[in-house]
Length: 163
Image (cartoon, rainbow, N blue to C red; front, top):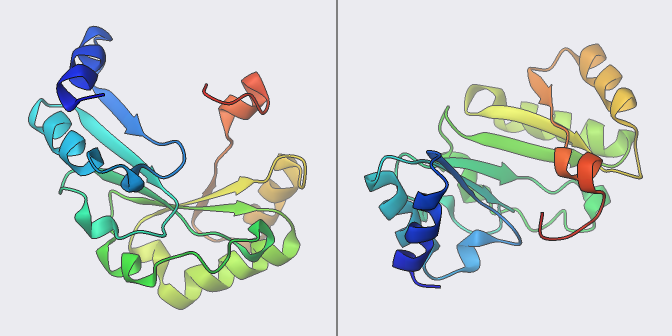
């Protein structure tokens, strides 16, 4: 779709919050321009990225939600480390935790790069591999400044795609 077509659709909803997600939005050639147009029209813009591409390309004003893949994901080497230098305090960094080893790895990563001083931190349980209550207890015990983030769409619709 063209940006004009997307904007016509977005405008019909009557809300001022738009999130680009799904796969990797930065792979889409027009995503940066779409963000610029949305911001110019007064929308709050969130971009959820897997962290493998440079977030510096996104216009100022976008809230970047950047995944750091833990080793348990099988994609632990995909993170682009230059992204750390481009985080702002309005951004979020998300870790999907599969087990205690991922939790410890994420804690070490946060401390090594002082991420708690750069962005809001989220830990989400990998559904089917760890219970949210177990992850919540580890967060409380660690005393790290992270929030528990639950992927509500998975609780509501399960693994259904496109919701």
